[in-house]
Length: 122
Image (cartoon, rainbow, N blue to C red; front, side, top):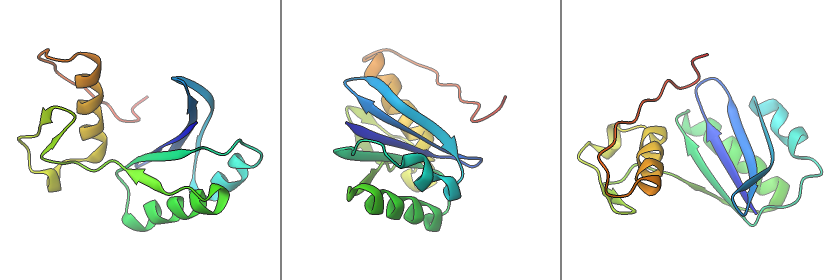
């Protein structure tokens, strides 16, 4: 089972995933995370994508460590990953956008793609 974290500008989203299925999920602010996670089964791994300040990312990772003793593997933009070559400066590319590129490439390998993201626009 995996814990998936998405730390965005407006809220923190999380999901427990097992065999490609979401078992539980939620969203909110840092203050409610620990309570939301009470009684959940322990994930074996934790993966995160963050566009927030490092201090908030570290606080969330601390809660994950406290709840389950699992470190978070954070997605960071790179020059290359999973068969994708990044022509943009990784230091200036958002982790959320890099994750979207990797996901799209995974779903549609070898195809030219345009990725459109509206963030949390409703």
